[in-house]
Image (cartoon, rainbow, N blue to C red; front, side):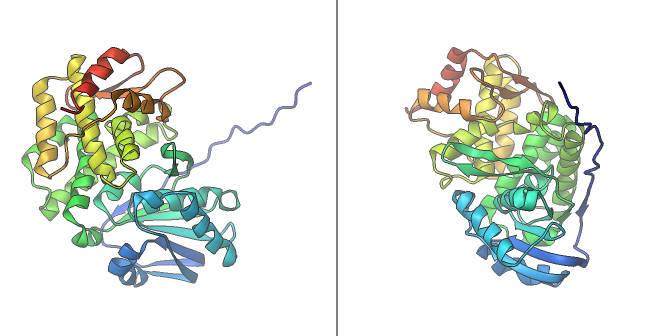
Length: 349
C-alpha cells in the first residue's frame, strides 16, 4: 500500500540585491539586528538611522570565525525566544560572513524558518557570502558542515561600510573576487590584473561584476548539485588550512587565496592550466598582500582532512580546478599520489 504526498510546487525565492547607499526601511513586525561588538561600534548608529520597526532589538555575538559555533547560535535563539519572536518576525544579518552565515542559519531553523535580510559590512561578504542563501556554522570536524540553504529576502550592499575596513579584510574580499573571475570570466580577471581596486569607482564595478557572476550561478543551481560547486575553487584546500590553524591565523579569504594557489599547482600538474596562468593569478593575489604559501606539517593528515569536505563523497575527493582562465572543472578521480606530490611542495623544507 502506498500513499502519495503531492508536493510538486514551485516556490519563488527570488530577491533583489541593491548596490548603493541604503534607503530607509520600515518593517511592520519584530526585527532583530544580529551583529558583533566591532561592527556595532563602527556602524550601528548609521544602520539605525536607516531602519524602523514595530519592535527592534540588537543581538551581539563575539567577533571571529572561532565563534561561528553552536554556542553563538544558541545565544541568538535564546534572545529570540525571550522576546517572543514568531514566524512573521525578521532577522537582519549585519556584519561579515560569520554573522551572515549564523544569522541565516538561525532564521532557517527558528520555528522552522523565518525571514532574514543581509546587510554585509565586509568586502568578502558583499561579493560572496551574503549572496546565495548558504547558511551554517562550524564544528570540530570542519567549516560549515552544519547548515541549510535559506535565501534572504533581500541584500543591501552599501559601500559606506567599506570605509573602515582594515587592509587585511579588504584583501580577503579581493580573494573572493579573483575566485569569481578565474572560474567564470576571463575578461573580468584581465580587468583585475590591470586595475587598482582601491579606486572606489573600479571597486564598485568589481563588486557588481562579482555579484552578477554569483547570482547567475545560484539562479542555475541553488542547492549546489552541480555548477555552483565550482564557486568553491580554492575552498577545498583553504578549509583544511583554516581548520588546522583553529580559524585564528588566517582570515577566510586569506585561506582561500592559499587554497587557489594550491589548486592551481594541481591544475598545472594535470595540464589544465599553464604555469604562466598560475603565476598571473598568484601575482594578482600578492598585489593585495594576500598570503600564497602555507607550510603543511603532516601531508597525510592534510590529505585525510579533504574527506570532510561537503563536496566529497565516500571514498572520493572532489577537486575544483581551473581550466586556464575563465573556466573550471570538477574532478573526483585525481590520483592520491599526484595530490600528495603537490602537497609535498608546500611541506616543511
